[in-house]
Image (cartoon, rainbow, N blue to C red; front, side, top):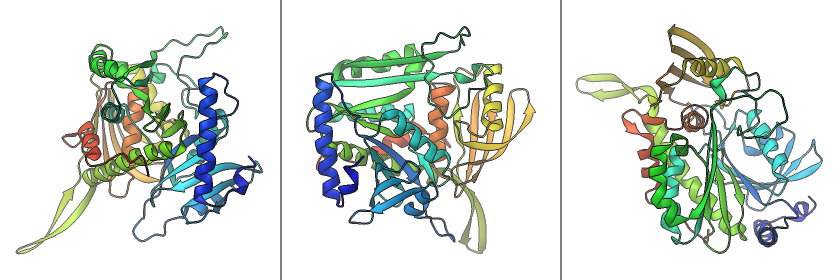
Amino acid sequence: MGEIDTITEREEMVRFLDGYSGQRKDELDERKAKRPLVKSYLLEHTRDCEGSRKTSLPEVFAHRALRLESLEDGNLWRIYDERQGDYFGFVEAFSDRYLAVYTIKEVEESDRWVRALVLQTPELDHFWISGLTFNQLWRTVVKLNHPSRYARIVFLHNSIYEIDDADTETDEQTDGTEDTDSPVLVERRAAKFSLVDRISVVNEKLHRLQKIYSPLYAISQLRFPSATGRGGHDFYDNGKVTNRSDSFRDHRSHLLYVQRIYERLTDATEERAWFSVRTEIQAPGEFQRLVGAPVVIQFPEGLGESTFEQWVTSTFDRPSNRFRLWGNPVRMGPGKYHVYGVDRHLWQPIFLEITRHHLVAIVPQGTCGNTIHRLVTNVQRFLDPAAKAFIGDKPYQDMVKESMVGVSYDPGK
């Protein structure tokens, strides 16, 4: 990727990716794509921890033989992959906790590269955008765009835990719809829909369709139409964003918009969910008070017994599980487990009660709020698309809605 090694300033990077995006959009319109599209991967970095030094991004990437070469202002770098002997792309820190990786590599290579980076790096995690969050972001798409513009929504639910399959918990993102010549056909519930229509039509029909068929709650991909020109920006549930517009500047503005919402949601989630003992001074002395609310994910349909048991086994017996959790499940009776575990992102504790009808998580202070987003996202995608989530008695979806208040999209950012 020879163009990247000549770029030394932010504006040079923006001009390069902007021009590249315009060329790719022309090819898409002519159905003659010659080179990969621009892709961004939104990631979360370790928060500042009291009493310990936060590992810097260059140090985090260096552990994976990735050299970050600083450009201009200290929060933008080129990424040189020492194992591949090539530049992968760029990384930009939006804040001390949130960042984006930009690349023009082929999608199979870039997806695999970023997935391996996160799995092997406790300090990093994906953005996890659940169907509950996407349903609120859809309202933003409706508000920001003309009703005659086209929307694209992808719904993906794959009940991988209905069978005991050694390949159930791999790090590959399969959707359960692949064609195959294999004599063994695995039958399990799998639904994938792509809905493309005018915004006004989708807005009128979507809620009614979701009530009829619950997998339609499991939105896994949503396109934001470009605010400045043709095409749009496809956001995925793991924080990947594909630029199908002719403008990288508009693409980055959409990243910043979603990042600000996500940051506010994570902060609000941690503030409400963190369990700790707080000392309060009142006359005539000091008192200790337990604060924090449990995270509750309800399964309205209930989980089948075999699905439930396979989920628990797959999640806690296999190190590369999709929920990124580790622990020792203790059976408390039929269809009920307690788990005293840790989140592999930052290796912080988490305590779970799991039944066929709900999951209750106790999140001690210091455990990343991103853990909650990951739980909700993966439950909807792989267990129950109609799952309902609460922080205490407050619906998770209401917290998403509140996090969006006052956050404006700035096309010139």
